[in-house]
Length: 308
Image (cartoon, rainbow, N blue to C red):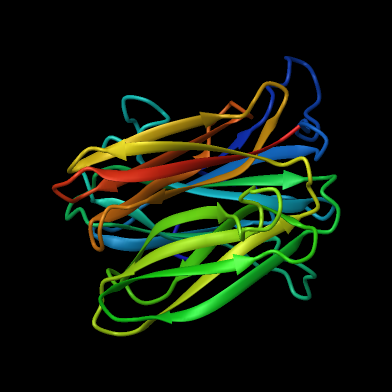
């Protein structure tokens, strides 16, 4: 796929994560999970040029009768030792943006997602970029809120998008503006605004490193739904110096994954976000991978957002 090309739900190079259809049976809609009626889709694209920035759009993954409630993204080799782990060289591939998009006009709400990622290899290393999307048939009205600011040159910027009223954050993302090698996404997590309950259900916080000598635009997104039963599973970790850290978080029995995220305290210019997405073929697990490019250990925290 060429940069900027669309993927219409499921297309060439894409993977649909659903139950296998028995021989002789007629394929139907994918099965739904839990009270929200969740379904899961993943799409992939290979890089055409090295080094480069590439992007893809997952076009209307949820269809007309469902809502986009979860987003994820990853960069991985086409045939790594494990389908859930990235094996390429440290710091060579990472995400720049993952966010909801309005692709159909007029559209009452975002119906697609868009991922931007970069690789710094000077030769073809068989890398794949991918998006994961979670859709819900029973989430009720879903709100997609955002906030914007200008990131100062050569600095780290944090930005929040807050849910309103009684809605709970179930996923989120960010757009880091600028050309190739200007910005990179470092973190995206749910946050708590210190309201009663002490749950990080109030919105989405993103962190972006601006590596350029110019101010650049940053936009944070939160996907908010009426989901009072949402559970926020968190796990702290320590990433070793100059290493890639891989973490998996599972929902409690009987609950299903909606979204997830990761924060990483490696210093400015020394952190990249390699993966934050659901585990393929497993409807209750979230995977995160971050690169710590510094010479010191760094703390981090991963989140899985679950619902029964």
